[in-house]
Length: 138
Image (cartoon, rainbow, N blue to C red; front, side, top):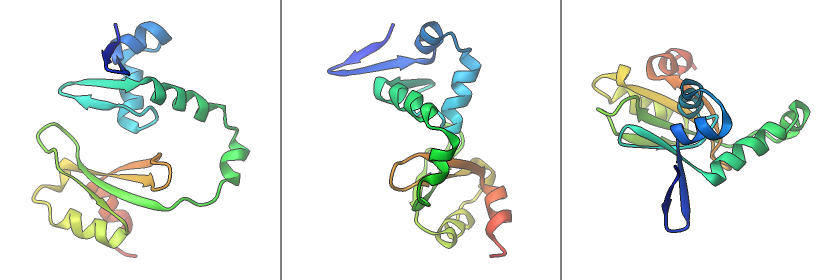
């Protein structure tokens, strides 16, 4: 059963599973990958109605429409990959992101979320080590 907080309705993975008939594992993967926008509160994911609408509206776009869009301004979000590391830092450039990653004690606990700065849409999520390997020689 969805949770109501004022005018906000939050749906859990269990709620979405029942409503949409999509497996809980698939829903969690969509949330981790950023295909479906949600927030993790404690150990549970929650999604708003707006996020669900946004997901389905995005699915309606054809490949040609997506290619016709202009190149997005990019931001890089360095974030912890589990509940032990809650640190998050936004960077505007690759070099700034690399500097942030190099300042971390254990980089295997971090990932970089490459995001369209205008829409907030997640383009790609890269493990910190892979990001460093990909961009260190540029």
